Length: 137
Ligand SMILES: [Zn+2]
Image (cartoon, rainbow, N blue to C red; front, side):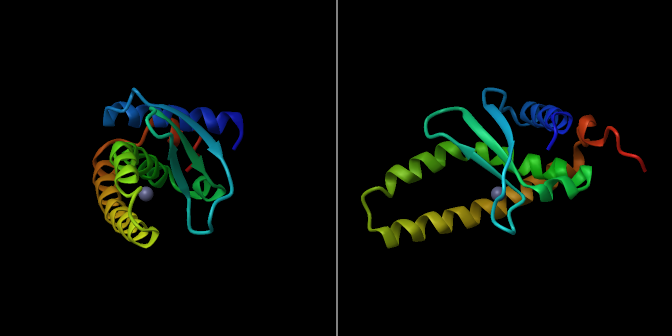
């Protein structure tokens, strides 16, 4: 990701933040190597409105529409950050197996929900301009 790409993505993130009412979050965009089937990941700090949107090389192969949906998806996860924090403290005193089972179940269901909402929103809201700029078609 070069500086130009980072700027464009940051502007698209800001656009989606506004749409989702998440302007109070401080989000930094960075590129990293993640698991093979992970394109992007949102990392937030417990008790803070600070997060990193981590993108892999695969993100840059996506079409602007797919990038838009991917950003929406990752940002929607921020609306779940407080619940995740609470889940972590609720499962602190149970066995590791039970804690894992609960966290896995919640995460799988959240993933389905997040995917569905992101699909719906990205399907009806315009692709942020900065994701389509410089696209020769
Ligand atoms: Zn997700």
